[in-house]
Length: 490
Image: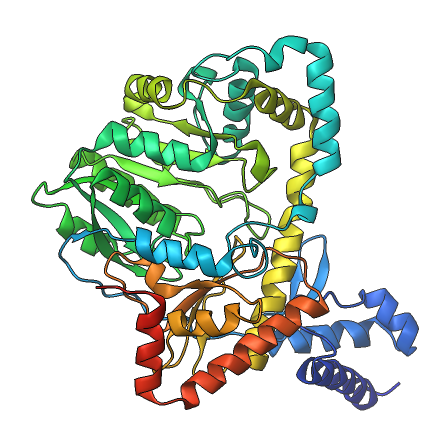
C-alpha cells in the first residue's frame, strides 16, 4: 500500500470517529475499542489505527489512560472565574435558606441534589456479611458503649491507609467520630470560641456554614480559584493582624468547585498558618475520589508542628448509613478527645468493627477502584450534557476528582428561582447562595454526579437546561419576585 493511500485511510478513520463524537454516538468518557479490535473490525493495519488515534489525540478529542485504553475526552470549557468576596467577616445565617432547600428537595436525596453517591454504588451485601461476622465473633458489640477514642483495630487500619498519602500517624493519633460532620464540629470547638472569625474558601460547603451559625462563628470568605484552590496571597493578607482564629479548607476536590491545590501550594499553606499559629482544619472527605493513578497528598502530609487538624470520613466512601469518620487532631488531640466524650461519648462499635474488617480484607481498595471509575464516567456524562442542553455562555468546572460540578449560568439566571420551578418536576440541585455567608453566587448552582448515568438522569438534565433557557427569556422583574419568594435572604 502506498504512503499516500495509508495516510488517507488513517485520516478518514479519525474523521469518522470524530463525527461520531459530534453527533453524540460517542460521548465524553466513553471507552473506544482497542487498537486491535478496531483493526479487525475495519480490516486495516494496526499502524493505520494507531495513526488515527494519534491524530485524534492531537485534536484533543481522545485521551489515553494507563492500563485502561483510549477514552473520549471531556470538552474543554472555560471554568467559572475566581471568586472575589468581601474582605469583611460575615455573621452566618444559613438555617432559613437551608430549611427551604430541604423542604423543596425532600425525598430527592439522589440525583443532582445532595453530595452523595447512589445506594447501588456501595458494597451493601459485602458489608452486611462482615457485620454479621463481627457479631458472631463478638456478641457483646451491641451491648457495650465502646471507648471514646474508637476501636484500636480500626484506628490501626486508618493509620495504615494514611501511609499511602504520606501520613505519619499511629493508632493513638486517630480519633474515631460519628461521620465527618462530627469531626468538623470537634475540630471547630477545639480551636475557636463564639464570635471568632474563621477563614474559608469562597464558595464553601453549606454544611460548614451551618456549623458556624450554630457556634456563633463568623466566616471570612477568601477568594478561591475553581481549579487551583484558595488564594494564598489573600489568605496571607487576611491572617496578618491576628484576627483569624482558624482556617477550614478542602485542598483536595473542594465542595462545591472540585478545586485541587498543588503540593507546592499546600506546603506554603501549612507553613504560613503554622508561622502565624492559626490552626488549619483540613477537610479531606473527597481526597479518595481522585482520577488517574495517584492520590493527591493532603496538607496534613506536610505538617511538622501538629497545627493541622485532619478530618476524613468513610461515610461518602463506603456506607452513608454507618456514619464513621475520623480526625487526626495533631496538637489538639487531648482537647478533641474530651469534646468527643462530652458530645457523643463513643461511635457505635459494630460499625467500627465492620469497617475495620473491610479495610483489612482488601475489600475497601477493590471497592474504591470501582467507585472512582463510576465517578469519572458519571462526571464525563454530566459534562457532555451541560454542553448539549445548557445555554451558550454557561461555564462549569471539570475537577480531577470527586463527583461535584460547580456551574455558572449566564447573567440574568437565578438558581434559587430555578430550583422552585425544577423541584415541581422532581428535579433538584443545590443553588449557589447556599454556599456563601453573604448569599452570593445567585447565578451559580452545584450538580452532583453521584447517580449511575441512565436515560432518566439524562432526561432530568435536559429538562433542567430547558428551564434555564426559559428563565433567561423571562423578564427581570419576574425573576426577582420568584427568587425572593423562595429564599427570604434579608
